[in-house]
Length: 177
Image (cartoon, rainbow, N blue to C red; front, side, top):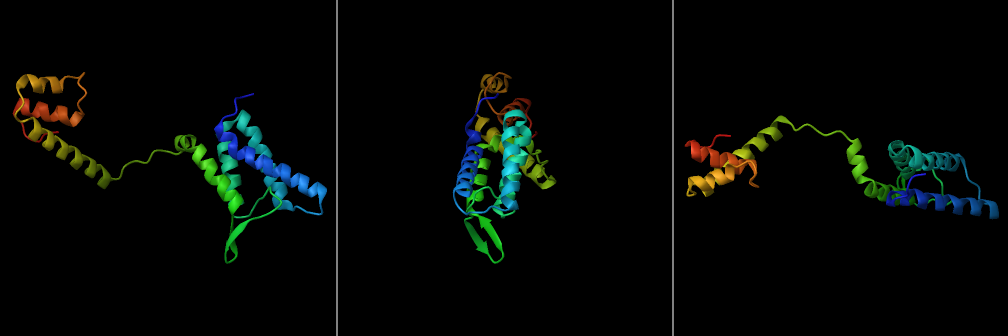
């Protein structure tokens, strides 16, 4: 069995809600419906996946909480909703979903693909880089040849734009990237 980490907190809270629901149903006349059975089933599956296939756990539990926010599943006998007409938002599921996202942020970011920058974004990055080179050239214009060679050195801690600017000055060029 794997180590339980802080990302287990939302599922633990959900399991506590299920236990409270079971106690309430068995000790009173409270009735649960198919929303609860589906929610409890998905929670059980998510709990098993947490320990054996964590990458699937993220999807299943996240989806369970998301559809629970809109009242399609439930695992607590009481529902606390804020309604907007016929559309309601379950506050318990919303809180669990926000907690889940915050505790699993790095794993979720790993699962999402990187976005390619658009052409305008690429142009902006190039312009920014050119402006940095120009700025460094202005700052380095009074440096000696030895100081410029120190900047260009591959082991120096200067950013690439600073190295380009120093190299341009040594080669007598202006604003070349």
